[in-house]
Length: 97
Image (cartoon, helix red, strand yellow):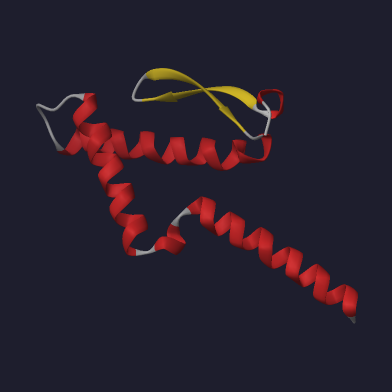
């Protein structure tokens, strides 16, 4: 994929702005993932005092990694890919009828 096909967006995480480049069709799931991560960071700030944002980011990353390692089908990107493949298979099977 060429650089011109990527969408440049600004996202906020832990009170900081990050500019990222993604495929246009990934924008919604990426924004949802960032929103979930930011919500988890807020929860961490309330539960644990005396930590900084880097600690919270590491904890959220570890939680995400553990969750997806335990149940790989909970990964939103994998679920979206599986849904897309299922739809394509259904279309092919319907065309053969």
